[in-house]
Every structure is written in C-alpha cells, then in structure tokens.
Length: 395
Ligand code: PHB
Image 1 (tube, rainbow, N blue to C red):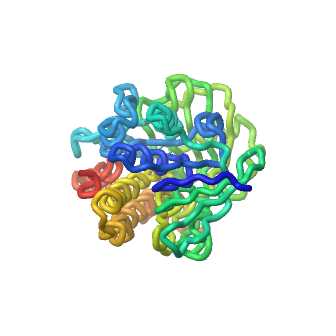
Image 2: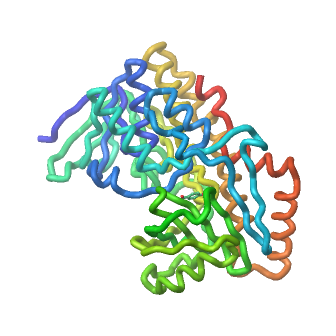
C-alpha cells in the first residue's frame, strides 16, 4: 500500500521555484508539500551558478526567505566586456541605479530549505515523483517512490511542476517532455572551479576570435571560470595548462591560477514548453523554460513564474476565483520571452559559432562596439542584467 498524503498544493521539485512558492504560499495560509528525488545534502552541496538580480534579491529578503541575499559582500556594481583588445565596463549603478548579487543558487537553496524547516514544513527529500495521475480532474495526484523503495501518493487540489529541465510534469501538461519551442547552440561551456584568489572584482565576459570566456567567482578563495568549447568535448581531454591558456584568451587581466578541482562541460539550449498549464497542473521555472546561462537569467526568471503562481493560488484558495490561474500562462510568458531574447542575444553576441564567416565576426565586433559605445545600449544591457521589475507579479 502506498503512503497517502493530502495537501492543497503538491510541489514537484525542491529547487528555487518550488521552495520559494511553498514559502510564499505558507505566508497566506495555503498548505503545500514539496518533494524532491534528491537528498538535502546533494541539493545543498552541489555548487551552482547564480546571479540574483536586484528585484529577485528584494523578493528573497522582503518575503523573509533569505536574510543573506543582499549582503554587501555579494554585491556587484558592474560587469566588463573584453573584446578586440579593449575592456568596456558597464557601470550598473550609474546606468540604472541597480546592482546584482552573486549569491549562487545553492546558497539560495540553503536559505529556502532552512525557511521551510523553521516553518515546520520541511521538503520531503528522496521522494522521487514518477508521474502525475488524474491530471484531467480537479484532484490530481503525484505518485512516486522514496529512495528506500516505498511508494507514495500525494493527492492535491493543484500540482506544480517545478521539477527542472528534465521535468516529468510536462507530460501531464503537454503530453510529452519535449513539446515546445526549442533552440540548440553549436557550442557549450567548459567550466572549472579553482582554489585561487579572485582575478577581478567584477565578472568579465570576453569575446575573442577563439571564442567566449567568462571569469566569475564563488568565494574569495574559489573561482568559477568558463571557456567556449565543443558540446561533445570530454572534460578530461585537456591538461590544466591548456585550460589556463584557453581561459586567458581575450581576457585583459592576468588570471590568478590555483589547483583546479572541478571540470565540467555545460551544454545549453533555449526552450519554452508549449503550454504551462493543464487544468490544475502548472509548470514553473526550468520545467517551463530553459535559457542559456550567458545572461544569468535562469533563477530570476523562475521567480517571476512563482510570483504569478503565488497570486493565482491566493486568488483560488482564498478568494475562490480561477481568473488568475486562467491568465497565468499569458502573464508568465511575457517575461519568459523577453528573458529568452536577452539570453539568446547575450549568447550570440559573445560566442563565435563554429561556422562563423569573416563577415560574421566583423559584424559581431560592430555589434559589440555599437552596444558598448552607446549610453542607451549600455543602459539596455544593464537594465536586463540587473533585472526588470516584477511589476504586477509582486505586489
Ligand atoms: C557563474 O558564476 O557561474 C555565472 C555567472 C554569470 C553568468 C553565468 C554563470 O552569466
């Protein structure tokens, strides 16, 4: 016999979307159960990327989900584009009077999980969802198995698929995991973590004839860096010396080296699921859409979905109206496509496609000089990077 549970909102996925939604719902008295196939240790211990845009940081801090997200030590007031032998800084404070917080996703998760535990409603870890059943009724159920093999079933009024880029909730919404709008890129990122001091106080996005490089950071002693590579590249096929040489290409500052303790190849793509809702089942975050990492939009965009859903579920449970559930897809898609464009644009502006012609490369430099040479264009970059306001989604 499967363990039976019952709640108002069953949330699949203890990632940023699922956990923030559970937190916001609890504030207005709506009950939820968050499940995730992974263990707490795995979720909190997997070092992830993450720029928190100012509006997203304000949501985290303002809702009581994280007291750390806007700490001064995480604040970045600008970024630099290195290309064609020069460095071009975007001064966010001057351009848009905003900043971003390099507070990586796993740190956000540590705070969100602590908030669930403090609220007396911890996520159910090692609870792997297998499928949603009764998806066309007003009482959908999530069924799955725990890590020790026990079956469970969660019966809910609403199910949220916040189960990431390999979402199975998509099947109950769209009939398949892949139905949607999709774009692959002919390149990937080779990423390292190195035990070294910071090479630069701010992030450097570099474009050279050899491709893209990003110099980022995790802590004062651990740095994250990426160079553009072939999506099929084996992370163990290059020596550390070759890695450092690739990372230095096009970057003006001399990189400070240290032991490399993680190497991975990140493939990326753009995706928007064909539908975000079927009856009482909704998709949010990476389950609904994926963006390439260049603009660091992923988690911030996920929060937009969550804020719309929070309002829709409040209206449904506390006011008895489905009107905001009905408009969820349209409301969320507005920002989703803007963020898709921004991420696509930053990606294509800074990477060299393997089949790029001399015309393409010269045009790309024309674009980079246009953007960095115009106060208006720099403002556009800064506005998107530091984060568009959530507007009506966060009242
Ligand atoms: C990262 O630190 O991993 C990172 C930062 C900025 C990006 C993407 C990734 O645009």
